[in-house]
Every structure is written in structure tokens, then in C-alpha cells.
Length: 348
Ligand SMILES: [Zn+2]
Ligand SMILES: [Zn+2]
Image (cartoon, rainbow, N blue to C red):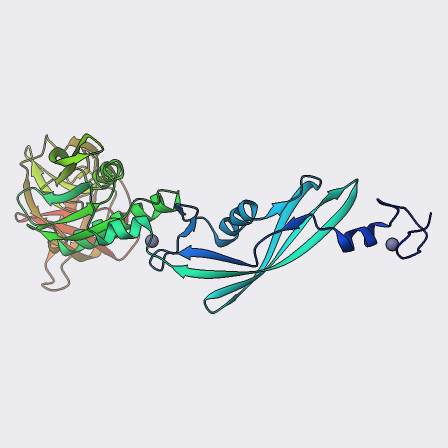
């Protein structure tokens, strides 16, 4: 058969013409040459219709194409691909639409310019307005938080918020934070996330959580409450030496309400409840640890020398082990000297 348009011999597609000639006069997709897309300059979210999303540009752009382009129902298995190049405030895109017409694959290309419009998103405008549903307060019992704890807790909270945001919790943000009454406060946009965060800090520091709420008015005919989660950390910390029931202990870790300790006479590991040793006597920390030179050792005993005073001390080993290094660490507590395990050096 010959095409009535171009005269080529071949398969006639429709209306007596070949597929190439048919496509010269027929389009199966059309769309706007310019698309306006809102982007939040603060968080980089894009807007699709009336909804802000942290989805990628490609995905949001494709959603807009599906919404704004007319793709003929005749085109079977339509697929959209895009090739975009950024140019200042606009993005020059090629929108490629493919599909099948009577089993013949068809490709149509459109040049589309995406104009980026800066617009503050719903979440960022809430954040700038100081919106917060909950306050997380971290304090310590009978003491101020140390600088190290403040830095650590702060980065812990920031990491948790970032992880939750990445998992799709777009509405979560830290409105404000700051040192307060020897501790630290975090103002958070979401109360559920705030409680999760408080529990996570408790997991690594121990302590007790107290909840309180404050009625802050009505919204959509419902009472709105602002929550405060107060986490009170124990007075003692990981790395403290404590005395309890005629014995001395080194705190090797704290999690939730369990305190993991090392008993210093026999090097036995134990757990205490935070409450059980709540009013414990804290003897000190690193400042009690001294390095001694190992002079000699037998199976049961060890002799060490203070490098500053050259005084030597003999003591029983808490356990039947051999010390490998030339230096050993001891803790000097109330005129008594306790050997410390070698691996505790990195365990402060
Ligand atoms: Zn033809
Ligand atoms: Zn934003």
C-alpha cells in the first residue's frame, strides 16, 4: 500500500496515510508552556495545588504535568519523563510523553518553562510565628546540667527531629530552644514527637518524666492543650564514682531507670534502679583517677608506683587477671586505692 500523503510504500496507519504522516497533523498530548511552581525559600518544600510537600522537584513536577497536561485516552500506557535544566529563577524542561497507538510507539516532546515562585510554606510560617504544641524540659536532680550534657542532649534532640523529618514528618520542627534554670528547654511543633523525643533522651540518660498540660484555648471547637514534658535526670552521671551500702561503685552506663555499675572491690557488674540509689553519695569523677606504674604482679597481687611521689602500693587484684600494659589506672577514694579495669579508659 502507498501512503496518499508521501507516496511511500508501507503500512498504512489511518485515513490512508502512514504513521509519520498521520502524526504530522495529530497530537496526543498538550500542555501549558509555562508552569508556575511555588518553593519555600526556607525549607525547600514545593507546593502541589494547595498542599506543601518535601517531595523532590521531579516528583512534584510530574504531578503537575499529570494534572495540567491533556493526554489523549487513545494513547495507551502513557509515560511521562522529564529533562530539566536550571537557569536562574526558572527551569527549562523537556516533557517527553510516550505511549502506544494501535501498537505503534509514539513519542511527543513539549518544551515547558517552570517559573519558581518563592513563597513561605505552611510549616515555616508556623515556625516563624512561634507555634509550639509542647515544651521538653531537661533538668537534673540537685545540680545543673554540665556543658557536655547540654551539648550532647541538644545534638541528640536535633538528630531525632531530623530523622523524623526525613521519615516524612514535615510538620515537625524546633521552634526554639535555650538554657533555662540549669537545664535546657526545647519548644516543639508536635506533642506526639515531643514525647517520643523525651523518652529517647530518658533511654540514654535515665531519669523521670513528668507530664503537665495547659489549656491554651479553642481551635475548631476543641480545647487545645500545650504539653510540657519534664525529664529530670538523676543527680549522678555515667562516669561517677559513688558509695552505696558500704561499697564503692563506678557508673559505667545509665539507661532508662537502670544504672549499670562496676563494684570496685571485686569488679562485679551490677544493675541498680535509679530510685534505689537516688540519694547516693557521689564521690567524684575523672579527678579521682590516677595513672600508676606497674612494678610487679603475681596471680593475686599487684604492686604499683605513683610516678609523682614514687610511693609504692601493694594490693590484691579484684580478679585473677594479668595486666598487659606498663601503666595501670587506679581510683583514689577516701584514702583507699582501687584498681580499675583496663578497658574502662574509653568508657567514660
Ligand atoms: Zn506518509
Ligand atoms: Zn518551608
